[in-house]
Structures are given as structure tokens and as C-alpha cells.
Image (tube, rainbow, N blue to C red; front, top):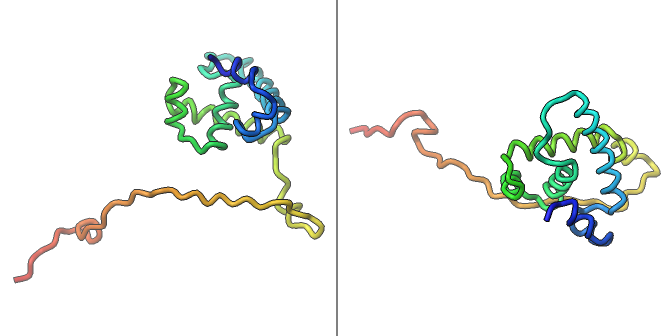
Length: 146
């Protein structure tokens, strides 16, 4: 089943759980993306492999679920680069629209500004580090001094 059918059958209260945003916000984002996509299509070029709806779902899944681009690419049957391009396109269009921006830092830090909540992402990520050997540290092998 494609995304259009699945999302069309999705009840309104599930949007917040699945995508992290409400249905009116989702629809507004989709409208902004479709308008921008039509503008880019006027210039010519090939059709994108991913639809506008797919690009929006990919971007929201990437940010809401912390999925890797390779994982998403496997689900959609495309290369990781297509996922990266879809997320970049979506971000660029939504930031440019201005409808989805947070207030500026000055407004947030003003005298009469109330911050209703503070969210901190403290997700642990395992980092692979190369082993520190004498050769890598000093650029030479250990020599014996007899």
C-alpha cells in the first residue's frame, strides 16, 4: 500500500503519534512542498523518484523517529543520496516559507517572554574510535634499546 492511501486512512488523532505534528500542520507542509515542487518542475528535468508526500513523510520520520538515512532508503528502495536530497529539499522549502519557524532568540529571551517548556535531547550515541597504538601516536614502531 502506498503512502497516499495509508495516510488518507489515518485518523486525525494518530498524526501526532506517527509524525509528531497535527494533521492541519501536515497538510500545510504538504501544500507548501507541492507548490515549491511545481516551481522546480517548470525548469525541466527528470521526475523525482519520490513524491512530495514521500519526501515529507521521510523528513518527518527522520526527525521524529531518529531513523538513519540508510534505513529509510531501504524501505523506499532508493539510494541513501535520494533520501538526503529529499530531506534537504523539504527543509529548504519549509524554512523559506517562514510558516514553520521558531521565534528568534531575542524574542525568546525578552523580558516578558515565557517559555512553556524546555526539551533537551540527551540521546546516547556509541562512537567507534580507533585504537591508540604507539605507531599511530608517534609514527614509528617500537624499537628495542639493548
